[in-house]
Length: 374
Image (cartoon, rainbow, N blue to C red; front, top):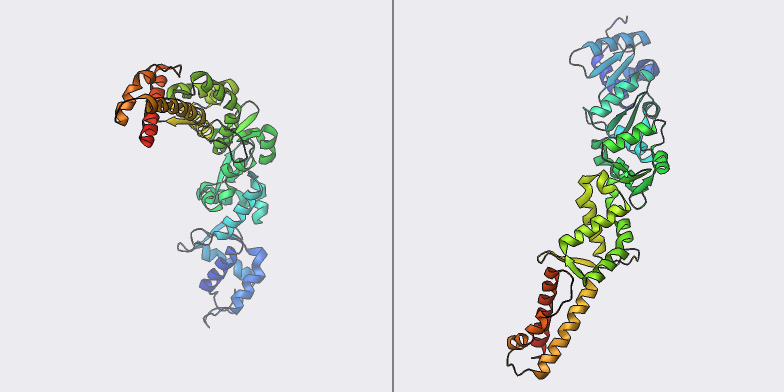
């Protein structure tokens, strides 16, 4: 024992600083020389020991950790922990985890231990610390635990999140079993896949997996498959049908091609709405041709816009030209009245409500053309 006592305040500060260089862990046997050197060069009271032996350091550390107000936590003999998160010094850990999860979707405890250069006995303590702070999420399996990115780290890491990574790897919103296994890249593949399903990241579609955050891409693929049939159905209906009938058409056609609506009933509206949105476009970003089915929500009607507009314009042009040439009416309203019976006689859609909608649109278009020429 030194003639003068150890300056435990100085030693404590040095230990906490050194611990932060190793993600909060202090292995005294590994850093004894560093602790001694920094202690000797530090400002101390003349009444305190100017130098310390390895034994002095270990004894002093036991006393420091035993103080109820100490921020150093004794894990076992010669091993201490200084919480970097509680002191706002967890950035290095978050950075390492982000880098790791950008490389791998799922990691083992051993990979975390190796990444942070920890003793085997400390990995459970460390992963508990990470999980408590939502930096990692534990995936429990029969033999061992695996880890993926946690919600708190996902907010910081962005593209390293599970959903983001799966979306990036998916093709048209889906992954094959082999692609998912490759992405997981750990031995307990089945357990991890089951975890991803229970956490609503993926949906099993008999050997393929729908990535829920890539549902819009999947819906685009469905829209590609439905384009011909939807175009045909609108041609048969007169290029217009009630919105409810259109929705049912989409549901029926989707069910003929995939069982996603049965497997995940909660996604029904989402999938159908995405397909509907895609089919409303004239063309996709990469040149795909879509029919342009537009829903008039006020009227509750869906129309094949280009064909429908051509039909309305054609009839309105013919009626307006006829009345402008032959009618003795003196106002546009009187002229429209003279052709109302002709409009009412038109049957241009298979559904009665849709046909009335067509008649109203023709009347409005006819009135507009007459007013332009009057």
